[in-house]
Length: 223
Image (cartoon, rainbow, N blue to C red; front, side, top):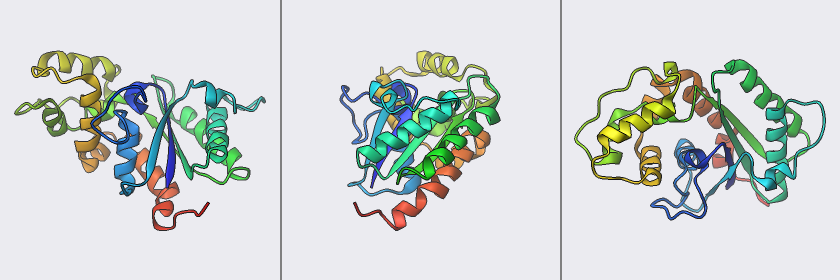
């Protein structure tokens, strides 16, 4: 199984140029999606920045909303490059959640009839860092410290990126690199805890992955 994972930056999808402790790179999304699916080691999860020129080259001009076009373009690219599935996750960034999610879902609907790939979508509230703040036990493990205070409701934090940075300034006494921290959180975070503390963002995303990509695990496509 090959999955193309589209996100907004290196925290989400990693950087192919960076060395990593994890086979999927240090981006949060490729690692967490692999875990959600219970995928095998041979399965490939490749990160791609939403602004990547390869993705822009597949955008179809028209009146569709920008986020819908991103999903269609990602589906075209994945189909062209032999991927079985696409995952697209964007931040809400204080904008109405349903409006952004609906745009992603419309993109999935538009691509469904033309490209033989499965598509899962998600919206992080307000940013992907909220998911990384949800499990204080995983944060402590990633930093190699005894414990870290539980953060307030991650989905009510207007600036989780700032909160995470401030937390690292205080708790990262071992000097763990940002990329190592991100991948460790993705690998160690308790899925049930992320669902419980980020129900509107991570919870809905995890359900979407299970619904739209789960069947690929049981019945892989033959290409």
